[in-house]
Length: 393
Image (cartoon, rainbow, N blue to C red):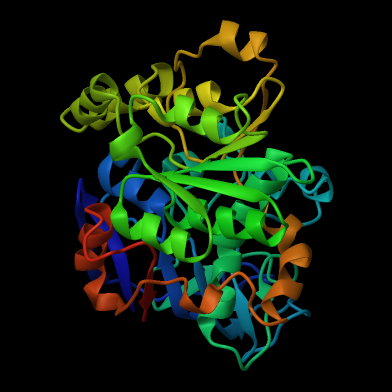
């Protein structure tokens, strides 16, 4: 089969690799019909190379059609249409029963001290082959895949793999009060969808970004937008001026480790790319190497007693935090990988009733799988208005 594989920093290729097969009686094999390129994939493309092996298959936002089922699979049959969550969760352990599928005790990567394994995402999360491929082996066939109906296009459902539940959790964790205001920092795929969900719930949404196309998309849907290029030095004051002088009730930080505005940390991240993998791994696991500009902005912007929902991915183990400010402002902070399966029941009705979140026009680009290298470069450089790219094997 054809698959998108990692070969080094900013070097992904479409290789011919062996087809996956049934290994456990609860496995299913899915023929992929659509698979997203995620902002988190760009961390692999740019920063997290020390935790990848050459030839690793990327991708964690797939959907497709079941092609083969193991002998103990009773909930799916060949021909069923399914979306695959990016967390690999058993659905039956203590953590899954608590709705914490990202902490699944069956698939926790104990040797790395990490939570549930993920498709297509580094040694830290199990080095499991991902879904930017023609075929994908999926474990826990009775509990993990999300069965969806035939009829609507893939775009209606594919975001159940990551974008929708991640954004839904971001809004849930933001704890926005009725009639409240939320600032969304970063209007990439997760920030954009978080803004749509918050709007759908009736909240006032202020979006911040520095990419004109992203600001334009949000503005067209009624989000109040601020261009960071114009307000990099006074953003917090401008937002306080828009919110009765006190700041918003909540901030969703949807940027993460590659935030604009932290040149020192940018250099530290770049330096790791020139170190031997073993040394770089130790540096990244022991030191604070994240570019924390967006998180610092969130701390400054949110009102006293407000909530920060941190959904942007971070990788540093010893990043410095302004603890006195966090404590003094009585800031509530929630974060974590999205627990995909936990939120599906809340989201699915919106996908079956008029598409109020605009999933069918959410993707800016749909490209064949063999064009993945160019698509990665385009997305990483924010060219051609790229906000969300779907690969179609």
